Image (cartoon, rainbow over all chains, first blue to last red; front, side):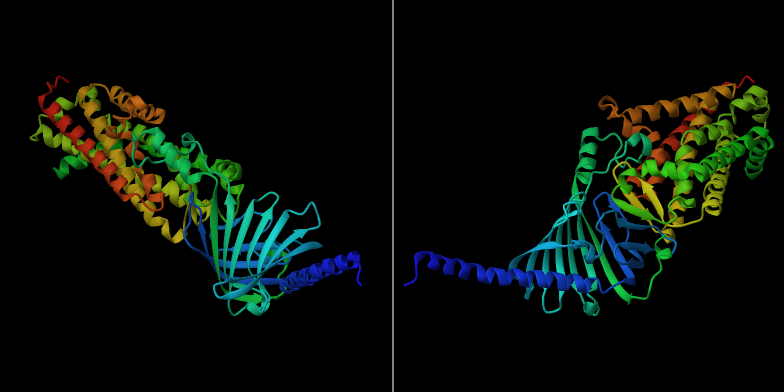
Length: 240
Length: 279
């Protein structure tokens, strides 16, 4: 007859076993995903970009986006001004996934827009890494992350939603929507001498309106990638 | 009428002081262009620190369009003075030289004479604004190149695509002409009261400075009168560089300036018709 101790051991192992297998699945999935992201050494893409921040009034920007692994990114606007969020993590999914050794916590499957997605939480081993925690929603069938929620040490939380199309084999999205934390923006009126559209209005009302518009907020950057040229061997000169 | 207008324009452009205005505009513009050419990045860095902290802005930001905007912004106080130099002299200068009485012996009504003085001051103002456009905008475009234009406001940051800029400048210069015409009409009115050109010129600038300070202080006690002053409306040209353009507000400002111009001109005609000309 089995002892109580042996019985408890079997019970304990039978509880842990599926979890261990699941954790390994999540870890494998993450490393496979990261490996696929690293297949892209560089790309040149025609893009449309829409910056939606309450204190910024910017029309849709058309241009060419250059990327070189691991973290070089540049938007060229053929003589125009280019704006990219100044974040240590930038607009590529590979930069929203922690590098080096990581601890992967498998959250399980969820269904989103009729698609089964595998959710992973990834914690980097390196304490100095700017990424503290990354949560990834992975389309296992195509081995792409369709959403990344990355908490960083210095840049707040960055949420990236990706829509894939004909470049899915490279893991390159057709559309990216990036939600970033932004700081307040305010300059003294004495410097800018703004044109008051309602001169003489109560200063309180005007200040309140301006403060409301610029108070700690989220900004959205939407990028449509129209065409990619992948791994053409971009030189570093392109990013200077 | 045309003959009198020609004579008035001839008188304005025969005087060396008229060209001082064009020289001053050129000198100030060149100084600002030179300063921005050498230290423009530091200047821009100061204004863009809120944006640069969060965004990586690349490209020819300090281009001719932005430099022209900075120049126009810097000349807010100087251009009214240059307009007053001529408009303030038009009646008072004649009185000072003793030619006003002689002029009024001609078969022309006093009303027509004032209208021709006003029209010649307007033409001078228009030419001064065109000169400003040439040296501030076109020379800056040559020196600094072109590109998308940024407009840094106290609570927002506006980017205007380069193919969307020139028509805004055209409307902005038209608006500036209207604003400066209001100054010209004020100077003409003050000129009718005086027998010496210095008084109207200084008085015009005094009124502009006092009104500007009243507006900038933003004290609640003045809030009720500020909408009725003309100085806050003079910077309406800046509205053309906003997104969306506040057409309704610009329209209100234009109507206010036009109304002031008409009132000043009517007051000049009324007073000048009643004035006992002794010199």
